[in-house]
Image 1: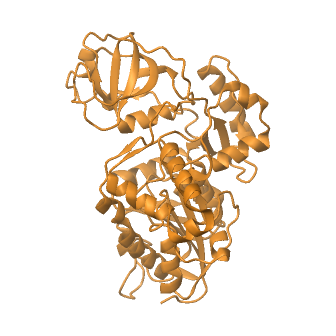
Image 2 (image 1 turned 90 degrees about the vertical axis):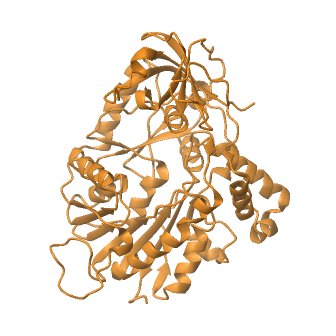
Image 3 (image 1 turned 120 degrees about the vertical axis):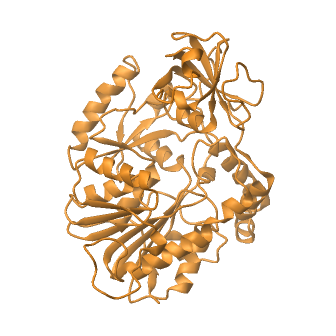
Length: 470
């Protein structure tokens, strides 16, 4: 029996997702029973973490082998000598894979309880400790040093500061409290450190809090694929249209050997500061980040460009990444989503505005990569079909490396077009319980295959602009 339930969604959202995964084209190809099985697998897998933690090596500052050795020593310390395999991805040479162990079902639950918010709970399932801002409730007499059980309030029903909670809560594992209940709820806003240090998590996954920060960037596998598909070259001018927090931006700069110009835009100033901090931390000087709305990035009057700041003249960039704002329905783990159908469906028009601006800003012969971290047909394959119809000068390209599966049926794209897409689909395989023994018995090829299959939901399309696409 699964440790966690399937993802909890509003009925209208679940029905919307189901309609996409059971559209006429899919039913014709798979049959109703198989389509239903895959949809239920999707809902189950979304509430569980992926099989691997993925980190990208900052090759601008160090070799992959050097960082791999440093990371091996770090993990030995974290897990008291327990040997975790660290795999270098064969198709993504700057990506390292660390298996996640779990779910572990023999952990004895403690009488002292800590309740955390859903977002904090998701982070714990991927190896994080519990930070004070994420704590919603703690048992009445909890002191620093107590052994506690940590639970996620997936429906957001627990009141801040409550002494007990009998609502829906999911067990995340055990830890040791760093602070007393009184200290946690003292009302002091400066309390931001670790509140509970996890010692027996249900999913055993390394913590990357301040681990080799100059050398490593914690990044989901498909997110690392995107920059390789974009294939930026030294000396080019590249635009990351919706860039925060800067994982892909810094990856692009590293792949360009920090030679050229990488422009990063985001319309939230705090996120732009985060991009700048990450660029500084990773020693990358080719990145220029601006607080600017990507939908307005095209300069409408044709006067001379001003100091390389947004907005930009048409056909200014060699390559553009549009990692679009999306419904995020592919993120894992996510045990509950409270979004309305209106919220989920609100992203398609925004994505089209951004895409239109990107096409105008791209030079003839330039490359545009569109990506999302969602699984909906409307934000992925339907957007590709719309783009090809709206912009005759765009051509859909094959992708290298091809790590994910092909696109999903239902948007009227041809079999050849679907093969040119990459969809990382959490419904592609049944989630497995993983222990140290099974890892030691598995071949490297099998582990890499599992890492490619059992990751977050994600989508990538690559276009080339053959002429001015009006």
